[in-house]
Amino acid sequence: MVVILTNYFMCITNEENWNVVKDKKVWGVSEMYKNTIAKVEKGDMLLIYEMGITGKEPKPQYIRGLYEVTSDVNRDGKKIFGAHPRNPNETYPLRVKLKEIEVFESPILFKPLVEKLEFIKNKKQWSGSLRRAMVPLNEKDFNTIRNGK
Image (cartoon, rainbow, N blue to C red; front, side, top):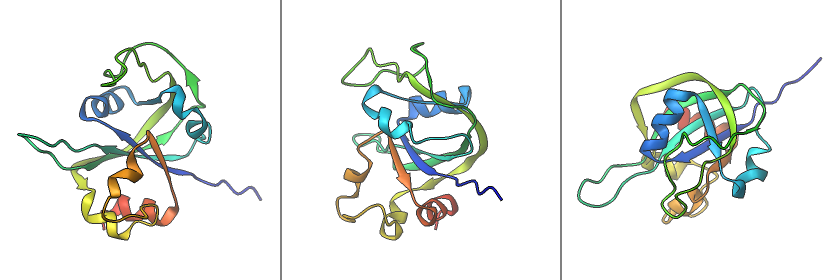
């Protein structure tokens, strides 16, 4: 009997690049995250987290959609993603193709879930746990986020 294990990840992005993920069905990271994306396999599940915005028109943090990985990691330097604020030439060349499972019509508010998530150790300064492109999730955290409760 073959047991297929599914890995779960939360992918952190901004609004502009969330729209690229949604439209092109692709996720990409920079070279800095090559070790993380190397753990991604076909059949793995990705939740897309959109960063919040502070300032005059604040916007909360959302989970926007759920995708299944359908390809191995490929290298593609074509510019499809928006520029990184500190590296305008970044193309996020390490990419996987995706199949849409669900785009949440009403995005899932992330902040109310923080207290329940095991991967976030510091519940007061929780955003520090998200200062990377991808966060591996255990199945319990994946389901907590996916179900929005």
